[in-house]
Image 1 (cartoon, one colour):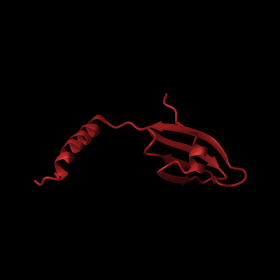
Image 2 (image 1 turned 135 degrees about the horizontal axis):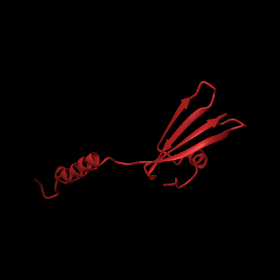
Image 3 (image 1 turned 30 degrees about the vertical axis):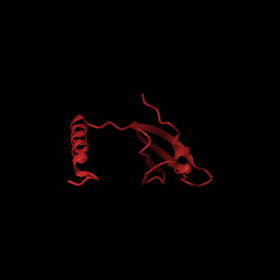
Length: 92
C-alpha cells in the first residue's frame, strides 16, 4: 500500500495542498479531501469539530492517483504534439 508523504492534519495546517474540498455530513462531521501536484494522490480525512478546540481525525486514507492507460496514451500524444506548437526563434 502506498502511503502519503505527510499526514493529513499537517498537510491541512501547513497549506501544502493545491485543492481542498469539504463534504459536510448530517451529524456535523466533515470529510476533507486534500490533493497536491507534488504528491501522488490525495488524502481524505473524516473529522469532527474542524478547526475547533476538540478537532479529531477519525479516519485518514491516502488514495494514490492512477492514470488509466488510455489517458496516459493521450497525454503522451499531446505532449509530443506540443513540441510542434512552440515557435522556433529562427522563424517558421
